Length: 394
Image (tube, rainbow, N blue to C red; front, top):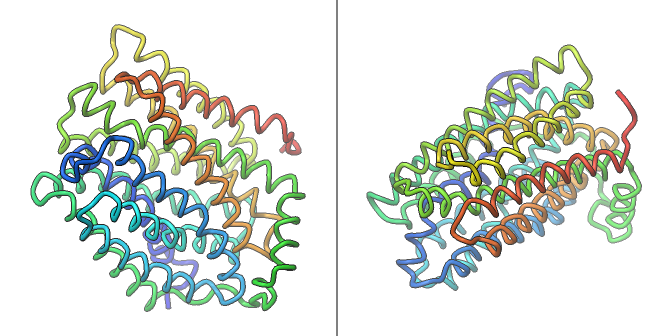
């Protein structure tokens, strides 16, 4: 088994968190072609993403308590095994309805990676040390957004969209084998009552009445409104509006991954000097600057794929200073129910993301403006949520 203090432990956990990014980012370049192949409207194609996100949100309420009851390891291995089979079902779908159904199942179990990984981190560390570890995971996790769109576009051009899901299934199977051999059980005292309705209700009450947990979960969730506004709209904005070739889309997207790595490294360095909540406040200002820029660029004479990407990169930099610290702060008082706490945070996160993706697509008017408005709204919402909950000053 890999020691929790080793770099390989961080690499494995980061790779396990990457599964969800692959399910979204690898598929993004294929969305327009997928609709054409299956004779599906843009709304129907968008449903493949929306049901995935809703399934992802719902599955967390099951995965979290299961990991508190039976341990992190069996839930992780079982969930990702089902996920690999669901990915194969996606690849074999010949109608949009079948693909939507397979994506829903995929979403239900994809959450096993991030939910269990966050709980594992909380099992080992807390506070700013947890935020530091979350940032380290981001440097690994960012390889997903960096490589996935490039790989997805290349697979699409050469072998068609089913090959994207074949590769996702193979990658997940490899991760299951690596976790089975290298990941030990981090939960020392499983909660035998974790699945009982009374305990579930009590844990939910604890979460909802813990100011830090709710406040930072909302801040983290609203960040994801902007993330999924970009994820949902960027294939159409970059490919259809600005004329970026589908197999080049991933290279634009990869710059965001560079931003995530840079921001995660910056966050770790700042945490050595200042408390996480202070760093988070600085990140909220950067978020707002990025949101304003994404609205301003489409209205300017310099509107184009490069300038709009630069604006989104500024927003993404702010996220790297907000989200790891918000996650650590929310889970800090929930050690006795880390699995359930991680799941509830993930539910808030994915519901916000699904709402952001749905609204930006409903407002899509053939320009980049709706995407910019949603990203600005996300940034402003994060700041308002932080001020409303008024966490104690660092």
